[in-house]
Image (cartoon, rainbow over all chains, first blue to last red):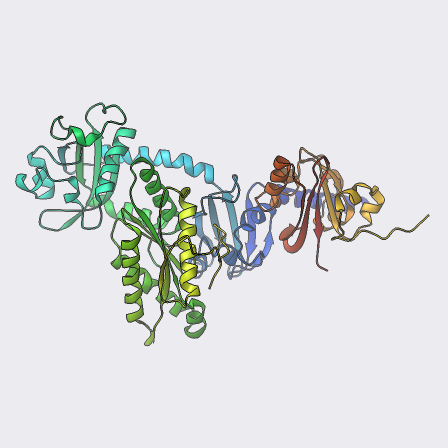
Length: 455
Length: 130
């Protein structure tokens, strides 16, 4: 008998150690996220994110970086099954330690009506590799998938259409006089392209041999179609450092642009894109999309300097809204604000849900003043438009912090930190206001780049 | 033989005090002691820690702390601080709130991180609120 007990104890210990050392985070929680069982890798990954310093609740620990988990779980109707499979959670750029992870993957499996199993993984390295693969895939899509029709045109080195052919009118409806000498942004809806972005596309084509993007495009009559636009350089580039503007009108065509109408494919690719890149509740971009877009924009800025501004909005006393009117009303407020944001900002701006009731907007090619102007316009719109949900009218306000990138700052975290300090100043000055970052703003708020504070 | 008072978790000058204890004295402490060398290999694992974690010393001693014993501490909050202390040659004595996953249950603890320049052995002390 003693032998059997000893064998059992030994097996038990081996099993415990197996779970201790499993190189993946595992946790079992209630449907409300309360943690019942959890292994060490989970603690390694979650402790730096936990706002309250505990691991009592999984959803609370991840609130700052994945605010929509509760909704995903409560919206999952089946009695068991995968609530999310490999959901990507973007953390900050990791200024605290060189080895801090940047992207986590989270799978939630509903075991039954009372238990959830969570699997957490640090996938920062894979994500880097995938980015390269994704670009290749886009290229194959652009050239190989069922082409219904395409417009082929050549661009000069500043992105102006310099030759006419009939395919342009067939796909876009524009006439020869409409397009010749115009920048190719005429095919983009208002707010979807800036002068800087236009040059970025050509720079990227120079660097990589081609560049492709997908999105809404406009025809001459104003109607929209879902298009892909691929740009490829037509000749070897001038020596680095040569100003391309100097060769305008002198050189032959510099780039070839192929615009394709892929409206048929849109639904599938949009649905997939939305699932990966959008916040579940509000439908706007999630943190991960924000970081990807913002880092890309900062990269572009390194190459050709331009203004970039960031606004952080935080709903004032949001907890009070939840406590007074209930969580569904809180959700309605979040969706209402997300709609106002989408309506107010340009398509080229990145509007994202950043944390629980915090929203981030990146404004390419926009200076601090303009960003502050539009931020205040939004603030006034929110103040004057109460949300009506279930027959109840709810007024709310928000505070905003605005910052612009400058050369003294290193990286995205610095920009976020400035906007965050400005936001903190707006809160401290009485809320329902916009503040811009300036050197006088004292570092009053505790800043943890991954999961942050404040009510 | 004079009776020496047992160490308590927040005694000062802890590195040298622990280094002076024999195995029996270490096992008599009412807090966990994990000692590891310059290569982060665990050399010391007292019975308080062993009982709480459910692992006997033979499964732990001789293995690297942050990858094969306590991966939950392998982040900037703990491992990085030891690494930074070793790189800069500055002593480390910090007490932090942390959560360990003892037998897969989240348990709030206080960790005391100890390193002294010139001493090969470094320590993590674990205090469990009773």
